[in-house]
Length: 234
Image 1 (cartoon, helix red, strand yellow):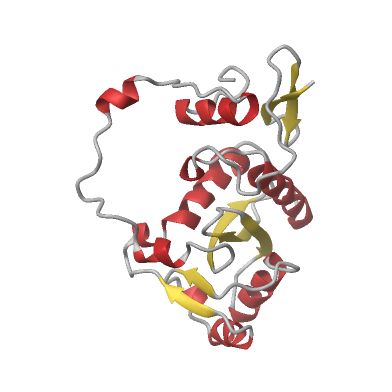
Image 2: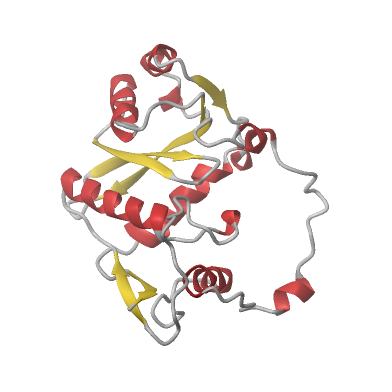
């Protein structure tokens, strides 16, 4: 697994093997000896508590990427906090204003319904009058993270980091359409095939037909044009 996916860490490898093969392996036994709980951890945060129901709380944030022609593309990421599912991506070329932010949110969430609450940071892009009016029309309560405290908005920040490490840093894109196509492919992989530490090795979208793979009859399936290889039944 490590040879075929060099960027996977020990916990990810153990969880992926357990998900596919049904083997509860401890890849890094030393973890049990050296791991010490953080004394500052006194339980779940208020944001975690609010998000303990599917589609009750979504997180939204923006990041940017450069094409091979050095054009700046803004990417809006929307995720469901409880399941860690990527709800959708939206891409905009050039500067983002109030109408553009609203259009991106509507594109990213198209066909997904609406949550009760939406968590966003204090970026000026989320302070536009049009943005607030759009959420008011959709009857969505906006929850702001604490100013200058990135850890108050950790879920989508970590997701953006994963998108950068696993996709944007590993591939190139030419146009907005090309980037959107690559993001949709990554979304499919992330939601249905990629295990998550915060979900004890499960995927955001569990399949009822998932079966344990026979060790004597398995093969490697390519995901996202061979960037990721995972075991499946032969």
